Image 1 (cartoon, rainbow, N blue to C red):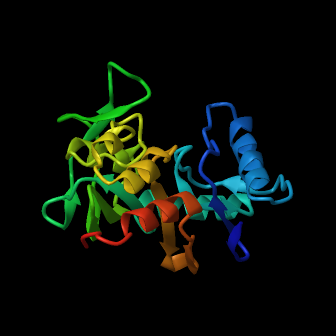
Image 2: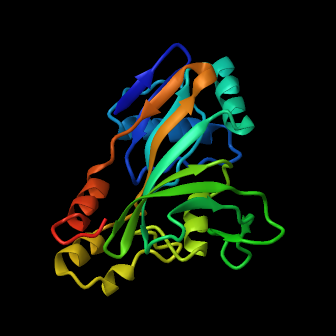
Length: 232
């Protein structure tokens, strides 16, 4: 779904399951754009350029640039910290305190190249979080990463004992087995991806402020968790 458009950018609502992975091959970025456009029901457009990526399981706002000049300006905004990004997540447990920041440095896991891990000599990484609701066994969180490391939100939450619901890579895919309520257990067991959603991107200097609604799998899990008897 197209969320926003101006003279320099298009914002799309990426569904979960779409890979935006790129490589050193210059054509890989164009291929990622083709996949995204197709998944969003958009016509192919060879002029659009990928500005940033989301993990394959993550849904939400993705920006595409309409020209090389726009791509440079948008990329600078992401790299300089001018871009404000907000995510929603369902994570296991209840973080203490209810709001704060994770500042653990991150590096590639030497034992598993697919993963990142907290490491003392890793790169600086900062993720601010706030608890929106304390639900049975799970918290609904809003998160604002100040840096853009690979898997940053997923790793920070997992490292502090709160992996994202459905995240099989970082330990959040099977904890539904400990949920006592049968209806909630079924709802959480049915989650097939990390419930992480790129909800909003703001670049004030470029006149961009765009938000994406929660996808149905995320919203459905919330409904099940908020059913009668839920603590908030």
